[in-house]
Image (cartoon, rainbow, N blue to C red; front, top):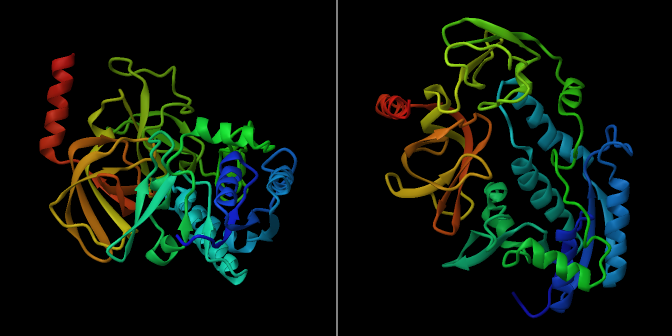
Length: 379
């Protein structure tokens, strides 16, 4: 990076983006803040009011002595992110809106707007890193493994990555809050935001019901025995244990129930007993909508690490086959509750190579037999 650049920082009103702006300002760059409002429906004091976030972002900008602009991307968010979010739930899958939000809003709509403002690049408070190698830009994990967010950034392309800065990539959260405190930033002790990207925390079932009519149906065991009623398949995800409403219903050895399958055709939720039930595992994943963020398609039959959910540790795998449309990824060990609609993200050491959306899963007969044998040994 050159000695001084014009950098537009996405400022959410949280501590992470505040410190990202602080660090860039301290480095002598021409820093401008940009606050994105991307949701307007029922944006009240009770749920995800952006008003306080804007106040906090403006307060930080004032402390840092930088200009800040507010921009409304609500239309883009509804068209590019929320419509896909709803379509996935209607199709019986469990989407991750943060992944699409990063690719379509934070690093597309925001980036385009920043370039029009004369920016050389943009910056966010994500915990990740970027480096250039042999003319390609690589997305790296953050040094703080507990906060690393590269999983959510794998859908960026090379053009987006080349314009992205992640000033927090070498810091941990404690250091970030301390930097904010020492600089007198109003956000230094602000609670981290959670919930749906740009929509926030709210009663999920009530929220989803506003857009998708609930369609109750039967909860059954794999052999067809009815054990309860579900409120609508969209409210459940594979591996879910809580909220099934069948805690008092016991068959067999009395283990807890887990969601194993969502049958959209018959509107049936299949549940099994026991965390280690064979139907909760898969060792083969078919991924679609592929995005190889670091610019190179991974080699087939080369050992990589991959995760099928954000908090998961990397699991050894190979890409058994790959086309422009889909990849088949095989894991060395069966993975628990791999969920269609979520993302499988592939890594080579510290480098995030990219990934895709999980379309389907399978469990080999050999892996299934190994699980059964382990269960027998532990019985």
